Length: 481
Image (tube, rainbow, N blue to C red; front, side, top):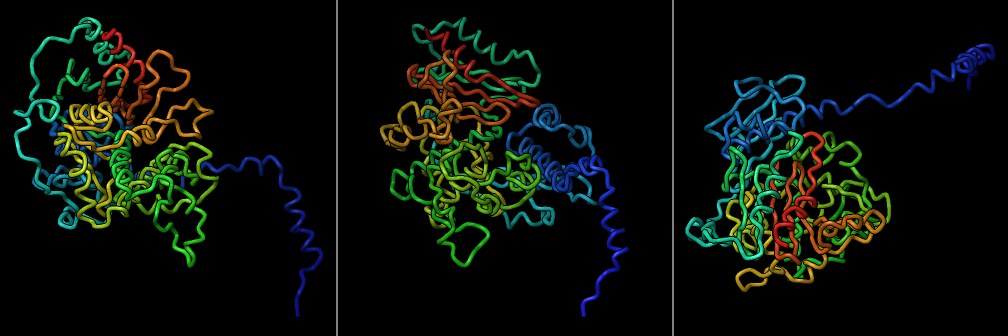
C-alpha cells in the first residue's frame, strides 16, 4: 500500500519553494576550484622540475635558477638561501614542499634524458626504476669538428652584403627589451650556412641547455615525418591505437576517424583540456609536473566536433601523434633510441636531451633540453630541404606539409601548419616563406628560405611575455639587404 503525504504538508513544502527569491537562485555560480589540491601538487612539481633541470641539466647555480628559471612562477617556494625544498646533490634530484595535505614533489636527473618528475608516492629510492638512455655518442670531439657537424667555427669576415652595424642593432633589439619580462638568453644568426652572429646573456654560453617548451613539437613532427617517408606511418590514416576508456567494440569508436594529419594540424576535434584552464589541474600538466602518464590523458578525451574543422592548439594532440610514432616503431628500445639515431646524432645535436615521463614515453610536446647551436642545426636541416652531408633525412614533401597552413586556420590567418608556425596573413614585414618553431618563454627557431637564413632566439621570458618573433626576423633581415 502506497502512503501519501497529507495535503497540508505538501502545500507547505511547495510553498517554501514558491517563496524562494529569484535573486537568491541567480546568485549561484561555479566559483569553487575543486582542483586546488592538484594545482598545488603541480605547483610544487613544476618548481622541482625547473630546479632539477636548472642545476643538473643546465649546470647553473641555485642563485641563477631562482633569478631566471623560477621567474616564471608567481610564488616560488623558498629562496637561494633555503626554504621548503631540498637539493639532493648526490642523487641529482630536488624535492619541494613538506609532506602534509599536499605531498612533497620530487624530480631527479636521468642520464640521456634530463629530469623526470616523480608521482607523490615515489621517492629518490625509486630512481632505479626510471628510464635512462646510455646510448654512446658518435666518435669525435665536437670542439674539433667544423661547424655545423661540430662546434669548431672559423673566424672570418662577414659575408659581402651583410651590414655589421645593422646586425648588431638587431641583436640589441633582441636583448635590450623595454620590459624585464622578456629575457633573451641567446641569439644566433646563421646565414648561408655560417654563423654570422652569436650572443649570450651573462650566466649562459654555447653549452647551456634549457627547456625548449613547444619547440619540441617541431622536433616531434620531424621524427614522425621520417617514419611517414619510410611508409611506417600514414599521414592520412588513423592513428592506429585504441582509445580510452576501453570498450567492448573499439572498432566503432568515432575517434578512429582522427588521422595523423589532424593531430599534427591541431584539428583532432577532441575535447580541449589545456585550453579550458585545466592544463595545471587535470590536463597535460599532470604528466609534465605531477608524474602521471603523458599518454592516457591524451587518449581519454571525447570527440566534440568533426576532425579537421577547427584549429585548437592542444599539447595532447602532439602527444597522440608521438604515441602513434611509438606504436609504429614497435620495441621499447627502438623507440627510446630513435630520436638520437634517426636525427640528433646525424646532424650534430649532441647537447640535446629528449625527455620522457616516468613510463618512458617521450614528452615531445614540451620537454626537450638543448642549446642555441643545436637548434640552429635543426633549422639548417630544414633550410637544406631535409638533406645533411649529402644524405636525405627528410623528404621535401614532408617539409611542404609542415609549412602548409592547416585548412582549419584559413579564417584565423593561416598561421599554423604541421607543428610549425607560419607567417600570418596580416604580417607583411617578413618574407611569406618564413616559418618557425615556437615555445613558451620565447623559444624560436626561425627559418627563412628566401634569405638562406636561420635565426635562433632562446629566452626565459615570464609574465605576459609577448616577444615579437617575426619582428626579430624583420630586424635581422635588414642587415642582409
